[in-house]
Image 1 (cartoon, one colour):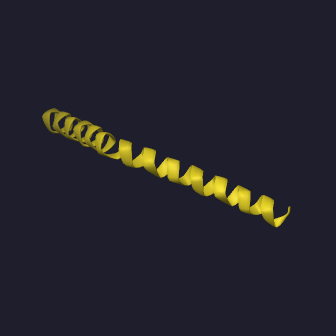
Image 2 (cartoon, one colour):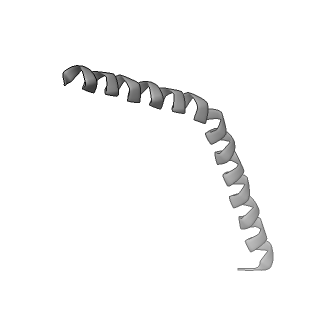
Length: 50
């Protein structure tokens, strides 16, 4: 593998990482909200059962 190829692959990987980070940042608030809603619902259900 030549230096140019290695550099190209590194650029591709960092670009993919950036895209993933951006998507994760865009999704995080709604996912976190959904998770907390589910957690509180499950907790309430569990409290009601006991």
